[in-house]
Image (cartoon, rainbow, N blue to C red; front, side, top):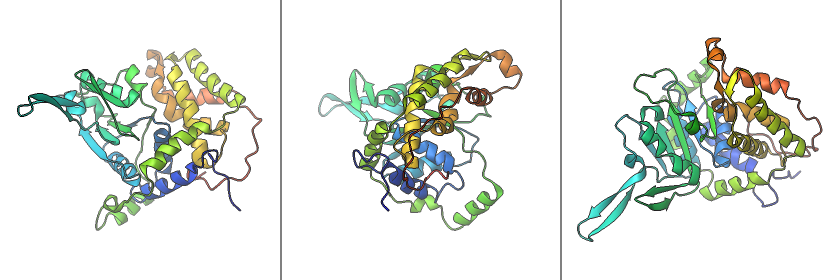
Length: 336
């Protein structure tokens, strides 16, 4: 029996697109389906990702595998304290032959940009990414240059080594659509990694399974996913609860509300539904909201974390029960 597309109003099978990308990336990244799906949720929502994890857990490989799976251009910036804003955006150079200034684009002019150890760059250099992330363009010497679409920034930072780093300010953290970690693999997963990389690295064999045009269509399709009024109110209640929670000095911003709404739409589409369930909201809430919450000093002393508090908030906010009929839906690429 034919199954309905999650965005059949414009003929885009978001679930099928996601399934192909997930399967392809899993040839390189072992045992991290949840994180791969979260990456797609962010990309389908035109958002950017902050990976906060220890070195050597395949953060770079995830970015490369996503880019190669969609046939997108990929560039990498290794952040250091002496990195300048123009090292990211590009610079105008005087051409003596034409007697004119010519713009030489920097590495930000790509479709998938990996910004490695972003907290090692100075605040001025970090801010050079803000316009690109927020508006999809770069302004140099008063001239704006559009960036190619789809455009995705994946920034990484090491949560352990803080010497010589410049922590991202809250306003800049809020610019990232999601923040999550890959984590260490299990024993079986690490054995599988050794098997896959015994003769060569599988990243060299990754080929595109989706075109950039298909991904752009998926980005438009997820916006058509239906969100019931009760689910909308559920999202608002969660966000407002973060602003009233005693252990938090700052709750999620309105940008966080919109991000949670969009992420829920994208996860529903990836799962194969044309409407959002409260479970979709719960599954993306941590990655979308944790980095937008600021704890009070006394909460930090008690070893409380934003994740712990958000779990308590989700447990306290009433879940709406009445939902549309699911009908027939294709198998989920999210693994449940």
